[in-house]
Length: 290
Figure 1 (cartoon, one colour):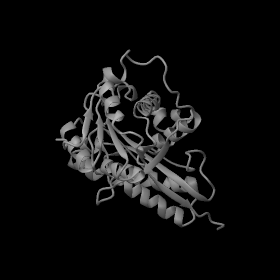
Figure 2 (figure 1 turned 90 degrees about the horizontal axis):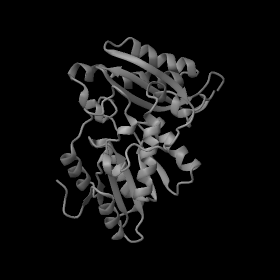
Figure 3 (figure 1 turned 180 degrees about the vertical axis):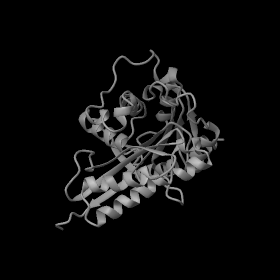
Figure 4 (figure 1 turned 30 degrees about the vertical axis):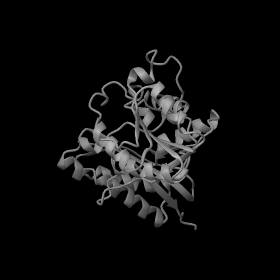
């Protein structure tokens, strides 16, 4: 459970009271849905480093219903509050905010939400049309409630990170958004709370995802263009038993059209054992004329 020095707030008034004691200390927030793992721990460390030992770090734990569509895993999403609080205490978090749905949405589901725009309707948004509107709406609310100087998000959900940065810029939120590098298991699989859904066979099959990224990076190094890089990723996924690729797409760093050369991003999503797994990595496109 939580150490005595770490405050756990469940209501808005408790959150406000806790912040009254922080004075003018720099604040960082790490927003999560719980089911915390080593990747989240690294985001907490990044948040602490951003504000220093004298700063204040908040972690929010809230399984946000607005970002789950019909037939998604809202009811089954991992809820491990005791171990989550222990991890936060171990990483010297100052405050954990664990609101209920009624605390976050006291008047019921909001009538006014954040529109994620064209990017929010592509890639993950194409199959999950309510997802990013729900994500950006709760992020906007939590930014208002926690009023941080720095907000930290993981790069594993690269489309989410990109959209949060764009929302912050477009709507003039006074906060710096930091991206934390994807944390992987020793075998290369990106850490995710949803990995808990995988049985042993599915967990082994899921290794095709980091293998597809490695194949794409090799193709890029050898001069492949964006379409050939995507084909290299899909070739690995298509050949892997138990893996159903959804997409493998090369974009620029802002998730726009792929560059002809220079830094890009490979975005990969596949269904493994009934679980939707996301991954991405930097791609350096050399081009055959370089």
